[in-house]
Image (cartoon, rainbow, N blue to C red; front, side, top):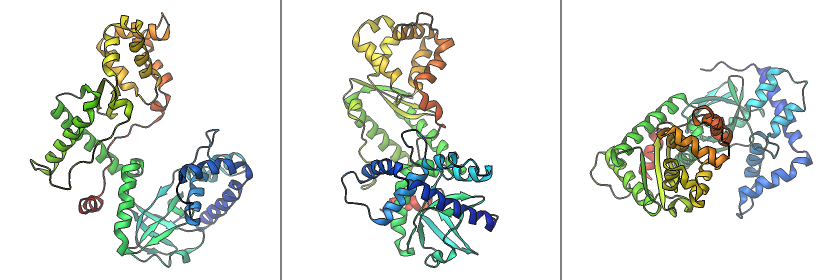
Length: 380
């Protein structure tokens, strides 16, 4: 069992949360929240009070304002008198753990729950007191947002409870969250290791199916080829030579600029996972013959690979590795920098043009789910 938090620290966390909420209700945040609310509604019916409170908690702790900072970061900056441990705790609240959680039982003033997404156990308390847990019997499901207070967790914002009989609703939410936000799964180190292994196995199947980890096809053939590959994976994993009705992979979808391209490269990298690169043949040809950059199409698409931050550095590294001297010529002409040298300046160039990629911690592109979520998905 996790060591309980000192009551004084937890009381202080509750006080700080109240001060933070009051700070966030300044008029200067009204327009920013209205923008978040508009994005959330997206033309749908107005949110009820519970949903609005959840959205406000997200806005305060996680939403990046136009200046790049969160409301909680601005609160900490506005209170330099706060002791360093309290400042660290408040800034740690940007990392919110979300439910659903299955209730395991009570432990004094705390509720012990298991997150259905990361399968970790959390000892949870409320700054409203333990009475709020009266309606959370064992095996019920708690839908809440948690923030860390020392070694324990505090409910942040409103919570809701589902009965044990409503497990399918909880499983559906957990499954959707696992697929939409795999970072929530990776909070569990064992899950992260499992995801890397699953990606390695998937890449091996890709190479066996296509014959290489880099395949170039016509844009209008990508969806069909990937669908065939996914059917191959499903048959291999399930050990059947044919796909059972109801188990067919869902139709694979890609952006129009990919499927409408003349050529698309599918690259399955060990770290970056599976990526799709439109008009690859044009860029590949430019790296093989830099004189082609005199033609507008070749120059524009090669520049797009460099300027578009959604195109990771992987594909440029691969093309340059084939002939570093020709790559030097390519970037000298693209950048109009006659002294550029790929071997010396290439990595710095990629960091300058792909900053978001280098700021991100490498993560697998697959999201492992628990046995019970997998069983629910099969049953569904």
